[in-house]
Image (cartoon, rainbow, N blue to C red; front, side, top):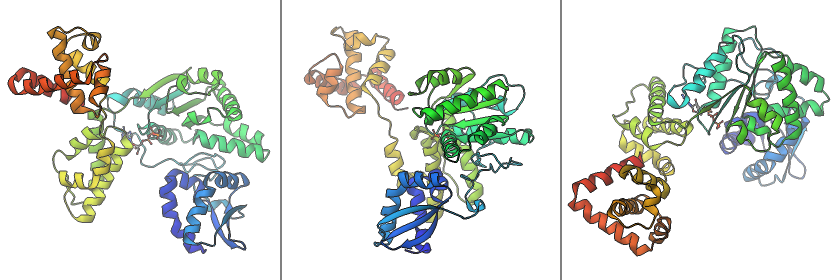
Length: 449
Ligand SMILES: Nc1ncnc2c1ncn2[C@@H]1O[C@H](COP(=O)(O)OP(=O)(O)OP(=O)(O)O)[C@@H](O)[C@H]1O
């Protein structure tokens, strides 16, 4: 096992654990060598760091190392003596911001996550407006600002944008941005090294505290306790706090009530799931950036619209798809058109195929024919209810993978032969009756949108 072999493993480790984890936990390790008995020895910046990596990534490291060198049968971490300057920014106790305070244990800010690159649409306009207001750094009006939303909807992007803006407008202010996980890590480290006074002083002396992914501290009692005191101390001094989480304060389980109520005491805003227009806006803006990077590559009409329509999960997946398209196109020297989309994104498209539920179909059809849901599912056989019911059954058969007996059960416990009959009837009617055909087509499109 050589340093070169360790170096060669970096890429695959980064892919396996994700870039953030890699930067935080793997990159700071230095490979010291292979000792007797097949022990691969690594230098870690602190004892806590070594223990954490050993517990969380020990098995992974061992399995990867033993693939390149079968004599490795154990990994071990020793506190490294190398200078802190070699430790990547993610774990270095200083934020790489313009004129950062040397002692701030913040996380690095992503250069790309600014307000300029954040595309605003209906689903995120409130969160964006509140973030802009806080980023002005004027009088504290809502404290904390609590931003929440599902995976990949732009919480971290907005947090970084606020931090960049604050640092640019108020270089005299100390703005500390870090994830809740890093807060915990710092806290545990301070406990172990008996530096709690320094820790408290440091966190209580900032002008703006930004904590990302606060749901992480749920269930971690002492970290919550410390967070609570930090929070109160800062609010008492009228210092701005900005928090993000993947759900609303009252939906975070295992969070102490007093913390929950503090989190709710300012402005709570959510980032809604993206809509088609926002997704298209984001794609257009990202494509613009890629065009500068890959001059000469063109995108055929309709490609971005297709992606915005089909990939509705989250923005990260959308971005990934675009990155792959540009990379693929430049490698094979082809234009970005629908053929390339199908060739290079088959897996992404399959994974993001929208699953339509029977409930959704029943609701949409009832709405369309202006009848009550209970009448569609209920026993009445009058034509006003029977025809919409058959249309709904037909759509369930076409748009879901449910079996006939299952569909029957969901329509008030009807037999599968009734469903079969309904489906057949609509097939026939679609050929004979233009109105029915049009209704079904309209409903299908609305459901697939
Ligand atoms: N409105 C937007 N405009 C431009 N880019 C966006 C927007 N929303 C999200 N993104 C991009 O999507 C990616 C994911 O966003 P981000 O990391 O901020 O999500 P998140 O909500 O923090 O997700 P997670 O819950 O996984 O932490 C980033 O590259 C970000 O730049």
